[in-house]
Image 1 (cartoon, one colour):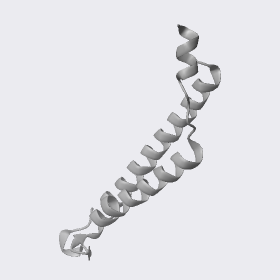
Image 2 (image 1 turned 180 degrees about the vertical axis):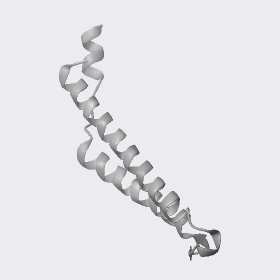
Image 3 (image 1 turned 60 degrees about the vertical axis):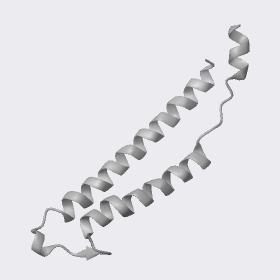
Image 4 (image 1 turned 90 degrees about the vertical axis):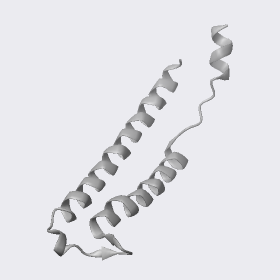
Length: 88
């Protein structure tokens, strides 16, 4: 692999790990922040407990939008065709 390809792959891997950590923090904060109350104190959104709605439904939408934006703006298409010819 070329040095640039490894550098790009490392950067994209770090971005992916960052998105995964952000998603976990989002989920954990809403699930255990709002979900740690007594059940009688829960509020409901569209029939779902607020902690579940924000951690799972909204969290999924937010992370899907973020991943789409990150992939379109920061990820690079790498062609491996040239490297296969070099190794032959």
